[in-house]
Length: 345
Image (tube, rainbow, N blue to C red; front, top):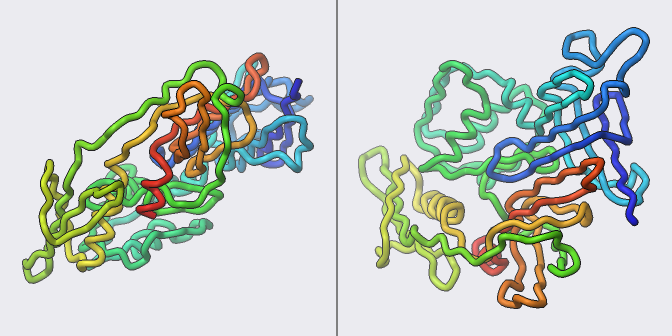
């Protein structure tokens, strides 16, 4: 039987045991989160208990790392989660809430500012100024038009990222390996994991073929400073997102942007279309704690009984959980087939 190995680093405290941990990771959450439960006895000393405060062992903002696997030394375990303590609840059991590097961006309060003919890099540089975080942008020069950041209540850097995710921009933001990525949810990279349903999957799954094709044609209109228009259309032909100056048949939806060039409008249409028009095998399944699966990885699934489900699929999200009685498990949600992503990378 495989023995579970756990390594948890809470600031300068190292643990090799917990009652439970749960880590959730996905590109569409903005913030990856983790939840750790440990006995209070672990932290008790003659002078202190683990409670929230400036003079305690655990404080908001302290760094956190979780590693887990089977029959391995701590230094060879893969990282499940890395971030910061966001809250602590004490009692017989200590409950520790954690967030990834988005936690630091949530602490970044912003003041009002007007940007004329802003680019993606201009905005991201502004909201991350003074924060020790690396960024990876899909296009530094992506045009956003005139931008206003208004200093309303609780305005922080993540609120700006939320605006960038919405229409007409469609820039998805997420932290991966400590880097703030701003662009599209998936690319053609990622580790490929080979899973046999009868061997690697636990219990029943809800995987099924879905067709989310209600959006057939996306019309993009870029309004220029002289009030002229650049108009382009996006549709999917043989699984490939295609941009044209001519309208195609199908249900039409319109996206309006400011001051984008023809190339910038084309990139925007592809980005928005990709995040709203998925087809293929979708759903979730539960597997063991290894191999460690992360979003943007590939799952090459083989089902001996239902061969129509065989294929290679992109991972949308992973929830990893370890409990004393239930072992180490990963609940994995997948999206679409490999051919679509490769065609649109």
